[in-house]
Image 1 (cartoon, rainbow, N blue to C red):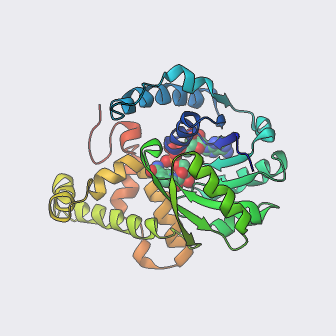
Image 2 (cartoon, protein in one colour):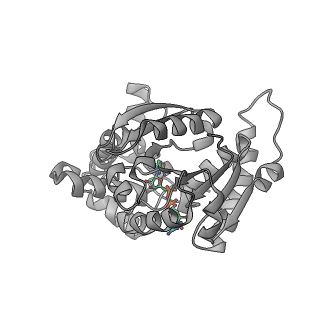
Image 3 (cartoon, rainbow, N blue to C red):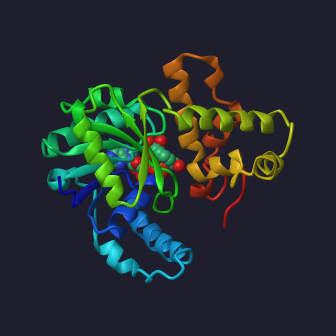
Length: 284
Ligand code: NAD
């Protein structure tokens, strides 16, 4: 299958990165979100990200942000997804929101179009259950920031076909990425561990065992991690962390996934991390 036109649904932290990465690797991209304001902000951020990331691409020919932006069609109208060969869904990590999106794109997109759910924790089999193409639904858990991360976690849902896995691998290869394939379970491999770790790090802060800086320093200085769990939470978005740990809690019915009350309070207060300028740290 020749994957040329790719729909990207949701223009938040991840949708922006996926759209940019696709446009930079020669695809025609259709980026859909619910408001023009969000799409304008997405366009602005993609332009800034290309400029910023070009500093890390030493020796490469510098890309023009305008050329990349021109390869992306920004729209609030789902109807233009009718010509997409492949769709990557990146809407808010809430089942109530995702469950509305899939029947809609299912009714618009071509029958051969593959849907990749870029979810942090929601089972792919559940997502596929609200479509009439369960065999063509796969999980692709992209890492953040998408254009700079060469590896993803791919999740095979109960009905995901081998052909769909191959198409998704081809899509990723066209984007310059490799994948590790895992079976379906809430949080998959990465976030079943990471979300629990971040939640526990917030408990440490709440219990005044250490400051945010010292929690992160222990992971960096002692374990050699590039980032500590609280810095990572700020990068992901504290709202997305809370929604993901809630998905794990609801799906496993296990109290070890109960969200920390400090995390809930910070989300209620609008401290969502880098995307709102303040989380465990302050960003300019
Ligand atoms: P975000 O909150 O930054 O963005 C979500 C976007 O979805 C918003 O722009 C919102 O307007 C849009 N949206 C909501 N309802 C919509 C609808 N009906 N149609 C179209 N757009 C809609 O969230 P994010 O961090 O970009 O996360 C998106 C998905 O990617 C989530 O499922 C999340 O779990 C997953 N994810 C996030 C990260 C991360 O580091 N942030 C990493 C991997 C996967």
